[in-house]
Image (cartoon, rainbow over all chains, first blue to last red; front, top):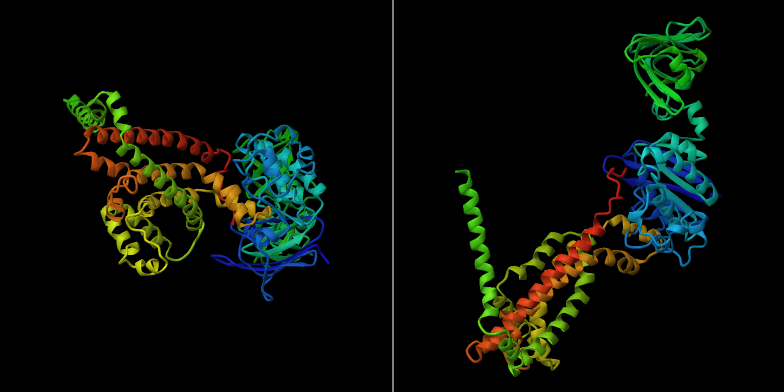
Length: 340
Length: 274
């Protein structure tokens, strides 16, 4: 039996949130666009949002609407890290952490907060606040840990560092953990399994690698960072030819017919000045629309395709925004999905 | 003449200030300070001071004790008829105090709505010190409730939710989170209400009478001494000015404290995802 299993139905303004999920001693991330119902799901598990269905934790029913069971929040063994951390501004770091349980159980030391014990939250940095919020949520030793957009309140340059820290802390916490985020990279870093939540439904649930390798639909594909190219497919010479809405013709080893989308990951796209003479079947010529450095890489937009190449390659090729280039990728690296 | 407007606006301000400040100053300037201090020692003034402090303290304590949890329930609750309830609370504020006095009389008086019941229980309220307490509480509680409700409405609900996820039951959420975070606004509302209660005149006069040493509060003593011993009336007047100034000073200090709590810069501006 999984430590946390739930089957929930929460009516929202425009749609109903209907999710079935079982979480072991692992970190599961829920990704999706804002308004998909992610935060609502966490609030429902914590008992802060009325819901029908069942929630059972280690065999105890927190919610069983048919039997009329609905534990109030304060009786659910849950730790919730709120999106903006919701630290008590009138209490010191120590008092915040000890709010749910007397004594800090060494959490202040473990979270590197001992030196800040007597500081009040308004004086803390974003990363420190997040550690306080997590320490506070873990202090009563909850059976389930929930985190709502734990990284969204941070600015971009502290985010990467804090994400690494958080991954480590969540692993040490070692309990059923649900993390809500809108960022696939955050989800893939923090979680062993990722669920994609769109308009209240789980579209796909799997390891980050599974989601990247075989996205269930174009939305999941674009969420994982892939190029999603729409077009019309037909069989040709044992391959499938897709005429894109932008006019180009590309090939894939996948089978498809009629309206379809091609999914290509940026790291599988190469960029050159002129069509290369190599094994790649697909070449899309276009104007370089943008060059965005991301660490030691550069994301290059050529026509409808985004490629990710090393900064060195970008420099060597002398890529300039506004000039022409060719994006190439292999038919074997081009996934086809039916258009929904 | 672009200066003409500026000059006349400044002149208007000077007139307004003089009109407001001069009478207050006149209270202090009519007789030497030593006479004022001496007048405060007269039995009439001393008795009134004791009655006022005693009745105000009891009334204010009751208002805080009942009003604070009531304001929390109304301020954090979402229920039908909430705005109607808020209007009902504010109604006594716009009533002339004399009307409040009559209203109390026909409720708690011998022949009032609850008069028969209270008679049967052997409780007689009108024209006793208890009547003063009721009158003071009646006129000051709407002021306190209004301020306190607004203070609790201003508390971030996420913090109350956070407390609940940390196993805090309803009382602990109230005492450890809502109350401290609303404290600034509660203090301000409490000071305003106390000042309003101390100055209460019309309702007390009608419902409790003006019996020296029993129901004659400071404002009633001013009225009673007006023709008997003008200096005493004057001296009590200056006492009110000093008290009023102290309340204003406190209000200037307390909101500063409130603001420092409510303006934490760390709340992210991003809208929460649903």
